[in-house]
Amino acid sequence: MAKYLLLKHYRGAPASVNDVPMDRWTPEEISDHIQYMNDFAARLEKTGEFVDGQALAPEGTFVRYDGEGRPPVTDGPFAETKDLIAGWMVIDVDSYERAVALAGELSAAPGAGGRPIHEWLELRPFLTAPPTITE
Amino acid sequence: MDEALLRSLTPSVLGILVRRGADFAAAEDAVQDALVDAVRVWPADPPRDPKGWLVTAAWRRFLDATRADTARRRREDLVEDEPAPGPAAAADDTLRLYFLCAHPSLTPSSAVALTLRAVGGLTTRQIARAYLVPEATMAQRISRAKRTVSGVRFDRPGDVATVLRVLYLVFNEGYSGDVDLAAEAIRLTRQLAASVDHPEAAGLLALMLLHHARRPARTAPDGSLVPLAEQDRARWDTAAIAEGVAILQAALARDRLGEFQAQAAVAALHADAPTAAETDWVQIVEWYDELVRLTGSPVVRLNRAVAVGEADGPRAGLAALAALDDALPRHTAVAAYLHERDGDLAAAARLYTEAAARATDTAERDHLTRQAARLNSREGCAG
Image (cartoon, rainbow over all chains, first blue to last red; front, side, top):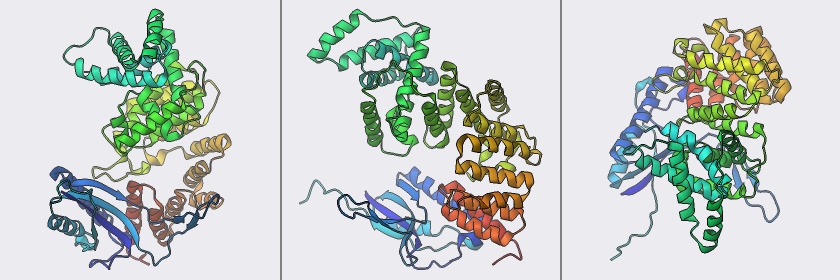
């Protein structure tokens, strides 16, 4: 089994095919979209492939250490040009091919006009613990 | 097996162990072990005296755990003079446990976790699931909390207000996991209100019951939020409302008003309205005035602005809102609502979108996005 992170972006990913912001959909289209996402997660729980899913607020702050005895430096909210993560799902699957197939399914979530968004999702493998058998 | 009965016995069993001389942290572990034993043994072999059974099992677990030589000497002394606590002592023990678990030296998250385990009898795993953290993390949080209060004298009374704040947090943190935290908070507050004479304990219990009564109507079948004005009031739990109102009236009659009683009074006025249109907003504004006087809280002022908008019209609500810091949580959502009521749909749609971006939970975010979408999809105000 291998774990993969599916990243959804507010900004920074290439534009999706059905690129209409959510507040320009109808309320029913929004409900259908949410239902699709919930059903997707529920299905992965049933197949034993779901690990975690979280949504993030669009605003955040960069923070760094500024030396002994000083408060940390903060910078933010993020400038418009920065990549912005909207949320993630972690899956635990048997193969890279399965991870790609699932990401494709998630990207087909319906948007404006009830048509798939074709949203670009970022698929990132987790680095694992070293295997026991190495030769 | 009656898990509710089992859990309700937790604080008095723990209290007895502490009275017998066990230190709090070890006694708490021993009671947890005894609860696990009970879950295993009781279904096949139910005890005639559940509490006596638990005390014996927990005490044995405690003795097993303190098997070291020095501890053995001490334990033999302890076994010599086991006091036989009466019912009054049990009630006091329960109350003291609440004080200890909500001790001001604890952070809110620690106090919540310790209360749910030591008073509520939940397992670490159940608490971890409810708060969506790994079990090991929750176990550490609880054991650190126990270390923090290890030097606190068990026999000193604490401050009821700190306990109420912890129970309020438990109630307000939602319904995730297999444990219903809201129902658990009600159970613990009911138990507290029975063991302490305090109008605010009654006020908090009433507040919880009145909000809990609306729960079946708060979400649509698809999980989306249903605002108060659009809820199907036939689905409100009338028994919970009647109980909440009765408890509140008895508390108010004592003439020692506090913020929980005032909040409960607002909830009672909503519960009392057969339809949203019949809500007595003028009285609700008066209760918010009391709440502002009692707490000075900006969040209360924000809720008051909503009530003013209903009582005196959206312009009055917007005027009340203008006096408040727009960085307040939900400020933008309230502004959107009042602008919509005032007929400025374009401004309302823009503000709903902005409010969705500021929402702190997904249900509210989705609700606000739908509101924006609803206005944007009306003809003539796309822009």
